[in-house]
Amino acid sequence: MRTTQDTRPAGLRALAWLGIILLLAIGLPLTAMGLLGLGTALGRGMLCGGLALLVGAIGGMARELVESRARRDPPRPRLEMLDGRPALHLPRTAGPTLVSSWSLAALGAVIALGAVFTGLEGRWVWCLLLGVTAGWLGWSSAIHRGSSLAGGLWFTPAGMRHDDRGVVVDLPWGSVTGVVPQQPMPVLLRPDHTPDVTRTGPTGRAWRPVRRGGVLAVDTRHLAGGPVLASYVIGKAVTDPASRELLGSEASLPSPESLT
Image (cartoon, rainbow, N blue to C red; front, top):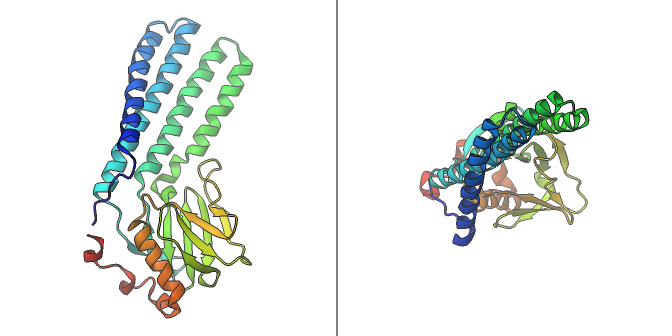
């Protein structure tokens, strides 16, 4: 499988790690001081603030590591069943989505701890606000969905499905007119067709991928084969309708040589 490259400028990568180091440098002593002063309101506030900074630092570090691993070992196309019919599936690397989910859940836990502290102090308005915020973060994390939230692209003889963080778009081939091999990857649609969009995950994790002008924007950064393979499958299905019948069969799987 081809090893992909980090497309971010070197300065941006260095800035990301600098931010992680700064969060750790501030969060660790702040957490320690909060633990020492746990008997005071100031100490409890420092503890929650320090833990929130540590969640950000650990989440940022984990994301950098899982994305590096995904570039070394990208996901592979595979055959699956979709709504009872065979499909070619281009999965999306689950690591970044899982890191995002657990970071939201961890931040929700820190805010829930803050809600408990404010409740013990009798500050009920703040306790309610923090409790609602913690509950919303825990729900939007969708950690119970696991790696399935990462989604991907599915191709069948009848059409294609795009799933990204709980927003699903189903398209028959007759509504697709073209594709542009870039990131993000625009899939061009007939202007008179309204795509079928279904939300299966929590709100706030993904924006509506169908843009004005009849375009489906596909995030291919962590997709098996990237924009090259996805655009080839879509372009082939649009320009050669007979090839659609092969989608979901062994013949639709790309050869290992084409992915190295």
